[in-house]
Every structure is written in structure tokens, then in C-alpha cells.
Image (cartoon, rainbow, N blue to C red):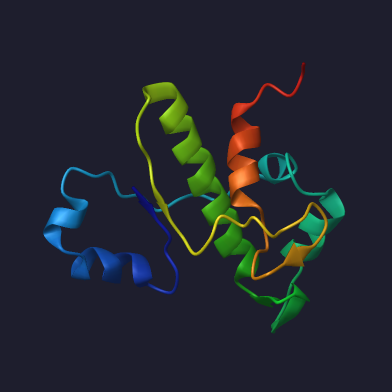
Length: 131
């Protein structure tokens, strides 16, 4: 079980979560996905634009951002990658607690509250794309 740390929410979630919810579960603070992992689905120009966001505003069709957006969405992408890896390698059921799978995000634009397509990134990370 991977949880996203956002403005101290990770520690707060662990403090407030019912003990039975987390019993026997692995909780972790994810690292940032590396750019190569994001490039499995998204264009380099889009990733660079995302990395350079400052302030807050509209980043696409109903896709809003703050200066912390890249950090947050990159960590969610890494959580999805880690969950896919664990599921495939250990035949384990995994969950990523996040807002959405990012299914509206396109390779070069954000849409419908989705900045990155986490589900597509996770699946692509498990495929051998060299064939």
C-alpha cells in the first residue's frame, strides 16, 4: 500500500487511519518517477513544460496546476509503476490510493483533471517495448 505525501497528509493519514485498514500492509512514501518512465507514455516537450510550471492555473481542459504539481504527479506515477511491478513479480494484489488513474491525460496534454496517465505508465513499464 503506497500513500502519497502531500503537505503532511501522509503522516496525518497514518495517524488517523483505522488500525485494521493498514494492518499487515506496507506503507511507503514514493520517490519521483524518472523522466524515462514518464516518456513511456508522454512526450518530452510536455514533460518539460510540466516540470517548469510555476504558480497555479489551468494546464489544459479542466486540468489545474500548482507549483507542486510535477512533484505530486511524478510520485503518483512512481506509485503506479511500483504497484504494477509488485503485482507482476509477486502475483500480489496492490492498491494505489490516489485521485484517479489519469485516463483522460494524453501524450502531450492534460485533460479532465488528469495531468499524467498513471495507468498507461504503469502498464507500459511492465511491457517489453523493444519487440
